Length: 97
Image 1 (tube, one colour):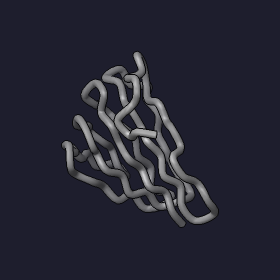
Image 2: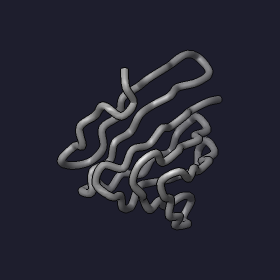
Image 3: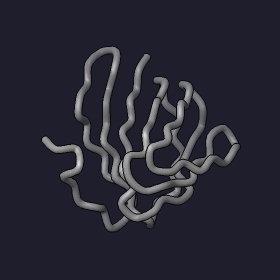
């Protein structure tokens, strides 16, 4: 599998699990520029990298802009959502406990 072999969804985001075991889950996420309003509150910590594009996140009430090459750590149980993304924003998310 090639991490960069994907299609951009017309609306929302596409999630592809790359690896999953009892302690860690690695997911490729591709965002369109037409996002559904969705807040996430996860049981695991998340470390997410932006590999292509850019996005604006709302994490625990604060807004953060992330660009290609940047990453964000989101602790478990913290509300977060993607407010905006450039079309084709590519993320690599690592969830762990």
